[in-house]
Image (cartoon, rainbow, N blue to C red; front, top):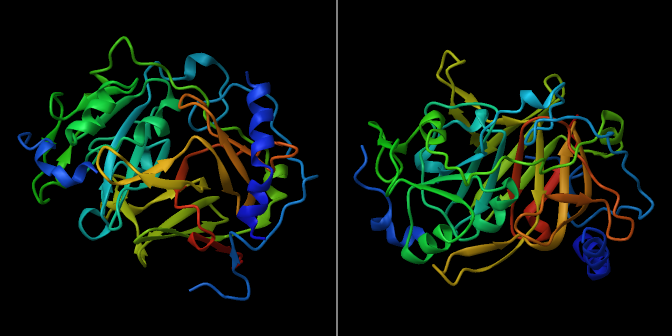
Length: 368
């Protein structure tokens, strides 16, 4: 029996328990905005090869005031920016858009499969600004269930086909499509359609009264609980044709990203070269079943229900399941479906990978 099968064997019972307790649009580019200016095999672990005892527990940090999207402790709620979360859809067609702008300034980045050639990034900003940010591309219908956990965030995107556009307009996302919103421009030195940019100040200035304020979407653990995980300092994630690798640096406590064999870089005003490698404090690999979206025929991540999850923090991995029942629900991670002990992150910036739920799409090792 595979790891995924074991995790899901008790899924229905666990899901019912929690519920009781808790009470392509790229196929039509003409509708986008066009007018605005080796791992050692002896140490490699696959997502199917290890088990977790149902008696495993995780010590959750006592309730403290935190920044909602990074979990950084704060002394007063007045420190939380009084503005909505801002989601910017950023292209990730590796051969043509790297370096992107703004990735190391986002509190959270979500990577989703959009077709067999590319992934797309949802960069979520709240505590930090970015100028510029982009290249900005089209949305997907799956974005609605992914992003409503942020409570009516601003949604900056380049447009899409009529069906996807209608779905987003009818959702609780605050639509800042470049088709009808100011603040976007075409940048020289880039080829269309991967040359549309903006900045976060220009986008936040368009917040409406309906926009919410982001709640805390992840739980957090202390260093002792994180250290109880299995050592894992190199992570390999396959997202259809995109191969991502994360390497943990114990000195900084950060994970650094490679993509298709090369360093994944983002623009940076802090570096003499003008770019720096993409990094985060946590990597979450949230396995999902992908269907076919009826709006556009593109992959459609199923992010309501449950599937395996792998939480990488502090050079370790803890395995479990994710559970969500409504689009507005936070991202909740548990060690198993019997005990439902929560798995938390280290405070800081997070990258959420959403590959297809196949064991071969995730491996890790401890090269240290």
